[in-house]
Image (tube, rainbow, N blue to C red; front, side, top):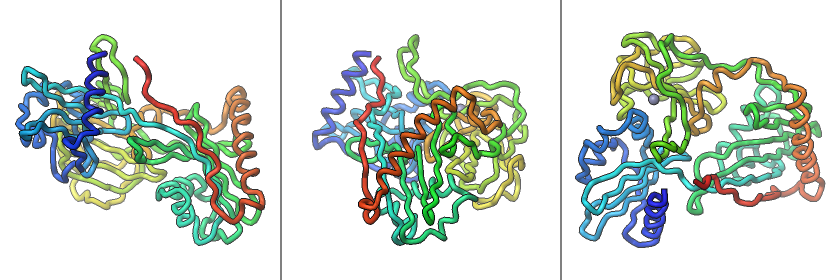
Length: 395
Ligand SMILES: [Zn+2]
C-alpha cells in the first residue's frame, strides 16, 4: 500500500510541473485506441479482470484526465476518472513494463445551504445563486404534482440544502439535494432526505414515493457480479469497483426496460459492446451492456415503458460469457440497482427511524425558517459552508 501512496504523491508532484497535461478524453476514443496511441501493449487490457475491463468502458468523452509524458514524448503515466470515486492509473515501471490499477479519487465533500427569493423564475434564480443547473431540476422532481412552480411569484421563496464535491478546486460531479423548502404564498412545503433509506419525506416524516419504479430487466440464472463502488480488497491488496450488476443468462434471452423512459443511446460502446441507455425521470438512467442485438424499430429518442422488450442478452464487447451488465445512475452517479429495485414498497418510516428523522428534520426546517426572515428576503444568501470532509478512508 505504501508503494501506491508513494506513486500518488510522486504523481501529484508532477501535477505542479508543466509536463503534466490535463486533457479532455477525445470523442470516439476507446480505451484500446488510447493504448495504441501511446504504444502500450494491448495485453495490458486483455489481461484485466472482467470488472476492470468494464470500468474502462465507463470513460466518457470530454472527461478531463491527467497525462504525464517524458521529455521525449514517451508515456509515463495517466490518471483517468471513471466515476466520481474511482480513477484508472496506468504507469510505466522502471523495467519498461506497464501496470494498471484503480485508485480512489480524493475529492472533498461539503454541504451548502442557500435561501433564494424568487425574482425571475425558480430555475433562473437557483442557477444564479448556486451556479448549478441541475439543482432546480432535482427540486422540481421532488415536488412533482404538489407545487406548480410556474405559479411562483415575487415574494415566494426556496431554501436548499445540498452536498457538493470538489476536486483540485473545481466542482466534481453533480450536487445532490438533501433538503428543500418551497414557500409559495406563505405556505411552506418540505422535502428532507433520510440517509438510512435514501428517500425523501416531508417535515412530519410522511413519505410520498408511491412505488419504486424499476424492475429487474430479465429472467436470469444467477447474479455473477454485484455492484461495488470502491472497495479495498485485503487479499488482492487493491481497489475493486464494479459499477453495475451482472446477470448471467443464455444468449438471446429477452431484455426489458427496467422502467419508463426515453432511449438516450443505442449502439456500440467500447468494452460494453451493444449498449442501450434509457433516461428515466428523477435523474435516473439505466445502461444495458453486452447485448447480442436490439429489438427492431428501437431508435434514439424512442419512448419505452417499463417491461417493454428492448434487446437480447449477448456477449458483445469484452465479456467473458453471455450476461447482462445493468448499470443504474442517479444524477450521474453510479448506484446499486439491486438496492433501488429491492427497496421495500412501504413509504413510511419505522418508529425508531422516525424519531431520528424528525430530530434532524426539525433542525433543518428551523434553519430554513430562521434564514428567510425579513432581512434576508431580498437577496440570495449562502447560509453556511460546513467544514470540508475528505472522503478517502485511511488504509
Ligand atoms: Zn458488469
